[in-house]
Length: 100
Image 1 (cartoon, rainbow, N blue to C red):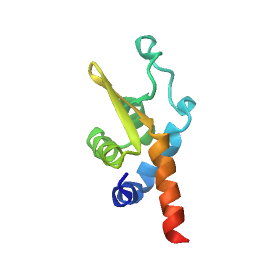
Image 2 (cartoon, rainbow, N blue to C red):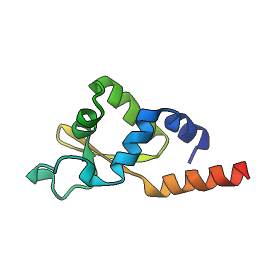
Image 3 (cartoon, one colour):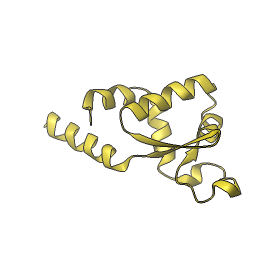
């Protein structure tokens, strides 16, 4: 975990909001039947909920992924994202330790 990358990725309200939304799958429409067994949320649902352009969401998700805060899984033409709870916990712990 790179704390600087995590802080950089979190230094944007929309990216923080995406992480909050991803905490609860019910924030998004139900998965298509062929994706019902997959963990995570299709990037199209994230883009739709955010109201941001596809290119902006792609950039934002790449930043979150690069920091390790989300995991991605590709299925055909769709990419599904889910929170990386382990890295999120490590990031919060490191910040807490560093700032005390």
